Image 1 (cartoon, rainbow, N blue to C red):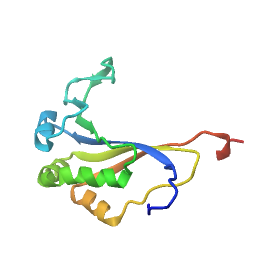
Image 2 (image 1 turned 90 degrees about the vertical axis):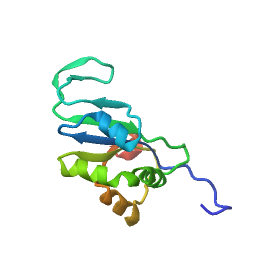
Image 3 (image 1 turned 60 degrees about the vertical axis):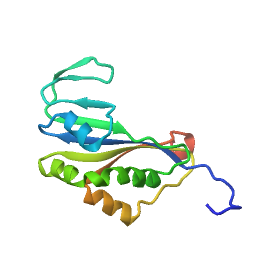
Length: 152
């Protein structure tokens, strides 16, 4: 935004987290390799549990590890992705090997729309960086349920 332009509120807020799944490795390997602390890490064969620890029945068939990606209130989605990719790029060979062994890596993006239209553009350079690390994007969009959106 150039100086002199009026400040316009964002048309959305977002939550961002990095997720890694793999058919067999221990989640501690991900923690050690990426030097990131997970919010949660589930091992293959452990009993399935809900977020509050309640048993859900069955066992995990794949390892699942995730960590939140912090960002300030004024930070944009692309700006936040680029900064986090800077942290991950030194670990490219580890990430690529995870995927080649049957794992999956993705950013989960919770997109919370407001009552205004708008969005953000993922530039090709950022998309290329994601692809080079074998990271997918998973969007979960939460819309404003106000009457102005056609609730007839």
